Length: 485
Image 1 (spheres, one colour):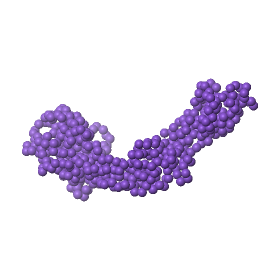
Image 2: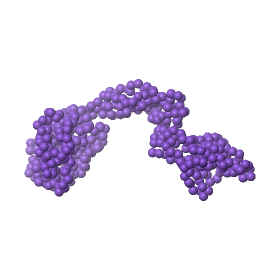
Image 3: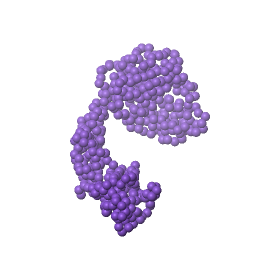
């Protein structure tokens, strides 16, 4: 952002002469006066700012104000006798004409007390300087990060020949050798390092190994002007998943060969339901690098013929506060344990087509762990196993029908990783196939199909495609699953 410094403030009463202040701003003082009779040769007795009342030659004009580096624009104003300001775009400039400077982006005016006024001796007061916008010197953080600071500066002209005036983190603006070599960044257990840039611009990027998260320290460290690396050494600690037992037991289920935690990344559990219950979700789940269990929520639901929503599930590291028979119109509420964040709706309603307004139990995530790339897609996949009967129903078909003649644009993103069972994938593909039929216009659909596991693959590129071709592409995914993984 351009910084504007207006330099046309005049005190209502003339100050006493201050030679030190006048020298600091580059204003040469003339003969002092207290009345016009003390001034000769056509000079005028008037207030000359830091010089006080002085004899001024009003016919000495100034040329263009000098422009220092990183100044984007200079505008000169003149104050008329009535006090109004008038833009004076060209010289000659008269005594007390005043400049307005704009610094280039990334720079700010220093020594803003230097008004850069035309002072009546055919030149201007001391130049304004646009310097880099840097944070202020922070002694506490400099000591904590073991930084060595160079000499303070405003511009590179104040540094020695091999130095430049730059921003050096918590040191502020200092003189630095741009070719300084900080060497290799300190290594950290369970972390890798990649570098970018050279010399003073070199940065070290730490990344925790799979199964670990950055518990403390800085993921990015910079080579500082003192030859040391900024920041604190990263500490990568093991990622763990929450105990899944309380959730499944609250629904009458259990875990086969249950083991107490901690549950590290890669740990697998197998869920099961009691006799007389049906199992929804993925029975085998793996602790993922984002601290979440893979797959769909494990749910144990009653087997009955009632017209109701399925059991919504109970979030791991959370709880279902409302217990009911889950009939249409029922409102339920969830909560997460202290220290966990909820992803999904806290309150949900059982809709008339027997689905929860946000797909059932939300996720209770540990904010310490970074989200994995597949987490949003796992969330979008939803609780598809509970929709197997629904996708063929009139109610869902009705909700997808439209009187618009515009061709729908649809992108299918389908998880085919090993954590997704064949049955779950089949239900997902059946749902997609029914969606294609309902959304197509004149037997065409504008769509694309993407599958992903450890990587991604485009099955069908985005285009207007015959409906049967889209359906055939969806059906090949399960049959040729190994080819796509």
